[in-house]
Image 1 (tube, rainbow, N blue to C red):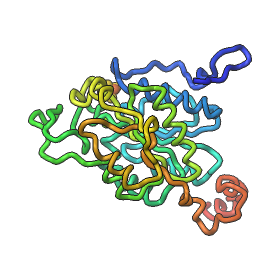
Image 2: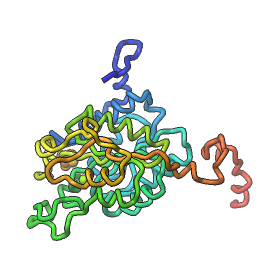
Image 3: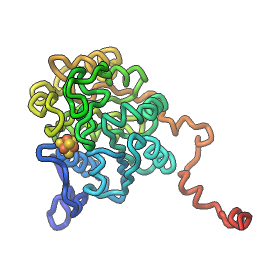
Image 4: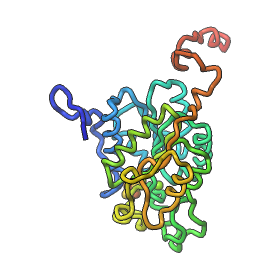
Length: 298
Ligand code: SF4
Ligand code: MG
């Protein structure tokens, strides 16, 4: 990994570190994701003052005070709308949104639907640990059916959401999968997902170990099954093959950039009033003197 050095020879990766102690459980996959995000941003030459990092509620959201950058920590399941609004206001800033599987596939699912169909210029990193970890291990929509969980010791009666089939049904432009136990692989995938922001919505499904509450898709289980499709003959531009590969996780789990297309414009570039505009919305708002509106109110 080619991490740049500063004048003193110290790895610039440290620029993202802050003094707050991590509170995740021992062995949590969040540690690996946290490290890979720092590495990816550093590899891309993006400094903390140049990026916006958005989180919602969940164990992953506790990263918001452990990773420097402009940061927003909002409501459960609502990270996508905030992150998209910020990005559209200033297209020059890379924006990363982080969400968990619980929120994303339940109260936040509508936002995910519209992010995919709109092709918003955003990188979305899904911390997929198969449960609601922060609230002590309840089943989420992607918990395996029949799997005993804290609030459902006999397993959940609902069938498991086939999240990848659902995502592909919404005609994404970028879908990747990676595993929290493989930091170099996550770094590589995150870099591609951040670059894809210029083309639209990049979704990265990170299969995350949660040793405290997910005793089925464990670190060892994922380690045995995950493999990197970029080492084979996979063509990420082939929608049907990518979808098939993404859905079939019975024996092996395909990771890497599973699908990507760059021939569709992102949402912002398709907005007719913005065509030919050189300024950002933030700059334009800054030019408006609101005094006369305020005077009307007094
Ligand atoms: Fe990590 Fe699970 Fe602990 Fe949350 S509950 S910090 S996801 S191991
Ligand atoms: Mg979760």
